[in-house]
Length: 462
Image 1 (cartoon, rainbow, N blue to C red):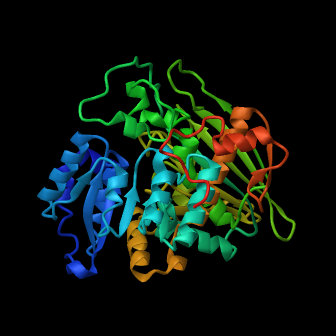
Image 2 (cartoon, helix red, strand yellow):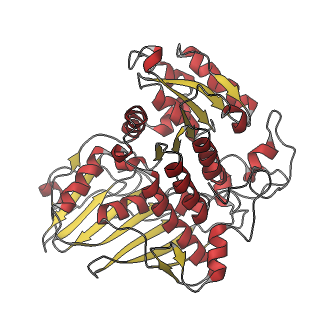
Image 3 (cartoon, helix red, strand yellow):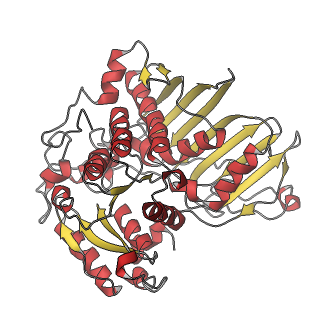
């Protein structure tokens, strides 16, 4: 069961998982609190329910209805009834909580994670770990100062197939890798326009707004569509693209970029969305030995083609792939979406799917001979297991997605969004993680133009 079907299945789907592992004794359990329970928070509950040495001891959400719904799910699973909280600050006073798992909207991620570190909790924080570049820097500092285990929610790093693909590229399966592309071709319809309306019963909208500027409630500024407003989200570049940027950088063995440029727009629809629905991003790197490398990333929002078989089934043998009829493309062969990565080397290219996929494919040599697709497991549960194992061992080096790596990948996303919004290329200093000679860009990357709404303020010193 993947994360999308789980949300549709509701409580029934979770009940079947309750017996997946026999519970460990109470003294061996890691007591986890989940913050943000709609959508992605349900996935967190789904995964922790399968790990024998975890107890979901507390739930936190600003919506009483979703809190009640998740508590009922857990009771049907035969799990202990969790404590419930509306305010994260009250939850963090509970000294029995070992770790906090954050699945709120983006504008809360860094603040909650920093507060949790300061309270002595380990943290699993969803991507992107920050709403701007400076927040990510502060979170990295907090994790180090308080010696916390902080896992970033870029779960593709735990996908066995992708881990194998990265290892194979390091061994030279496609030669010297010089460029990677990230694809986010997702079928996104218009969100339309929604008027100001009353706040739903049982929702603490002021607390949901948190550090963001106060706005009258509209449905488009709330469930899921908050992604498309700059005050809360980072567009599809931050929503989905963080995964693909992270895989591209990981596979290439690259750090912070030297130059960033992005162009695009909000095309075709006349609606409330502020973020672009088509975006082309380019990142240039200079390696320690002076070689130039390139990563590109693209968002497309509507009807488009697949590339390198991403979004289609893994199609048989090399002979079948060379068939005159070619691979069958389009929604009937896979999905509307193409989400994944393509790596280009001196002796071929390699493609991987999204975080739910379990496949990579290689085309080798000048004739682009297709190799048999490699099928090798999934990602999500493995990522949560990796986090819990590191919480117990205290070995940060064993984290698949440590916050230092997550921050750099998110920083690339923030830089590209800033380039798009300012309409110019940004030159960066990888050592200071700042834009060179552009005060306006650096202010935007700190959100000084917007500010934080007290008392929900990222601390200047952590």
